[in-house]
Amino acid sequence: MEGEYLTVEPEQCLVFTWRHIVADQAQASPESQVTVTFAAEGSKTNVSIKHEAIQALESRRNIGGGWNQCMVNLGEVLAA
Image (cartoon, rainbow, N blue to C red):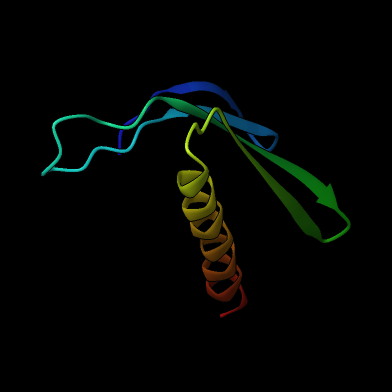
């Protein structure tokens, strides 16, 4: 994976490009963009992830499932 941070606003927002590169494939996936926002809700933080410009339906499903698992893993780490 490779990308570039476009926006970094501490405690508010991250925006970055995303491109998946597989070593045994000649081409990388088309570039997409991820926006992660953080909103304080009492003693907790709501994290919202918006991943845009994913062209292939199968890629959208796979990436969506990956983000869901990342949030589950993050919750487990923070709860420990």
